[in-house]
Length: 83
Image (cartoon, rainbow, N blue to C red; front, top):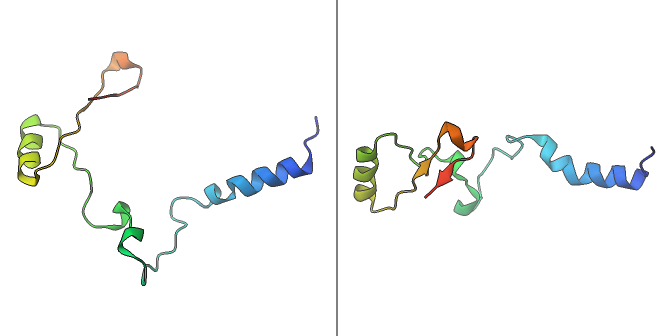
């Protein structure tokens, strides 16, 4: 089975950016707008994960933010539930 060269070249060009990996972005952010800086580049995490309900409620009240509850069980075949 032969694949046309145009299909191979197109595939390579489409997936080339993904081959660079997660750290392929330039590290020099001087002159960048604040929106160009992602959460991974800031020192404070954007989502805080809590394993104790009381801690999560206390922090949500302190920050005046909603709570995203995520639950999972072994019988769910690895598919988490979101409420």
